[in-house]
Structures are given as C-alpha cells and as structure tokens.
Length: 285
Image (cartoon, rainbow, N blue to C red; front, side, top):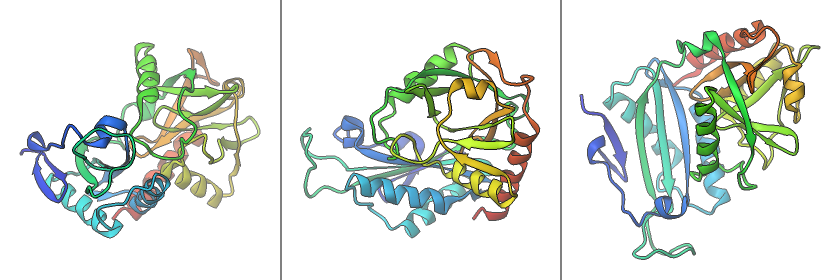
C-alpha cells in the first residue's frame, strides 16, 4: 500500500507530496513541528502535543491554518488511511510560501500544513531492554529552545556526532550542566532515590513525555526535583534515562563511554517505562 501524506487540505501519496521551494519553512526554518506517537492505532498524549503546538506557533506569531480539533481529526484520518498500528505522526506548520525571499513576515499568504506517518514499534524497541550510551556535546542552539522550531541543525550535528561515536543519543551541555538530549529530555535517579530532570524554561523544550513521566512519578509518591544536573552527578547516579514521544522511557547506561552504576538499565527506569506504557495505552485516542 502506498503511504499517504497530508498537504494543505489534501491527502496524497507520499511520493507526490510537495511544497514550494519558496516555502519559509525551507528557506528560513520559519515553522513549528510536533511528533505524536501511535500505539495500537491510537494517538498517545495528543492533547499535550497540540497544546504545545498552539503555544509554539503563538510565540512566533504564526496562525494555524486549522483548528486544533480539525488537526486532530486529520491526524486520525491519516493513521486510518495508512493503516498505522504502531509508529508516529509528524506534523509541521510553516508561515507559507511568498513570491519572493524576504526575511520579514509576508502578508496575505496561507500557512503550510503537512503531515505524514512513520512505522515504529516503540514498546518493543530492543534498546529499551539493553539501554543506550549518550555522548556529551556543547549546546550550540539559540536561546528559545522552548519553541519547537524546525531549526534543528545544532541537534542534527549533535546526534550525528553521537552516531559516529556509537552512542544512541547526545546530551547537550551548557555552563557545565546537561540541558537535554538532541531529541529527548534527560533524567537521573540519585543515590537517595530522587528523580532529577531540568526545570522548564527557555533553555529546554517542555517535553510532553517528560511532563507525563513527572506526573506519573509524583502520583506514586516518588520524589522529583526539577533542576539542572552535571555530567559528574549523572555518572554518580543510580540510574539515568531519557524520554520522548518516539522512545517513551529509554534507559541510559553510559555517558561518554563511562558506565552509570553497573552499566545496565535500572529497576526504577524499567518500572517507569512500564507505567508510562500503561498510561499511553489507557489514554490514547
């Protein structure tokens, strides 16, 4: 079956999905994106993703071409048309295409809205059982990381460096502290059983999966501290993990080749993954 994409009001074969070379997403990275997981044919925590989409476009004065309710309908129809069971829906909205290339916001043009799906068995990913290593890199990004911008060159370079080093993710470092992963939020479990993850602010993206994991942990009376932590603190921790819509909860077993604890996924990480998967299945729509 040919994969179906959505482009500006139409469902089309992916091979035929096109936007203008003058689209501002292509020319200026003038756009916002979201990725929602699909589990058993249903969208996971999608309301949180759409709320973040609304916030991000608001921060750059970009009008959505559809209501959030209609966007959710399109996502679900795309899942159905592609008979997607497990994977993700990618969504991007840009300021659209003008007749010329000019930095200032153009007037009278329609925003671009595209979506497509990808197959991925997130629950049964082998790396969830083995854990991954992370590589540290300088955080080279702009100062508004709370906006889910399509300007991802710094993350591309960070994740490429990690891939070349045989690591599964990059942890970006600023002022001696971990900000976040190239496409994930970072957590550690300290020796006194406190979950630590960086507080939300302009330094990091407010992760939807991060938010859910923090809430699920607190519901179970686990101690959570939202603050910055160093690589040295992470290496001294009991456990470490990352979260994202495309990974759920992923154990981290080493940093720059140095093992964390015994170099195996920890029991708290494994349990939080189980809890999150249960949450995802129970609340998906």
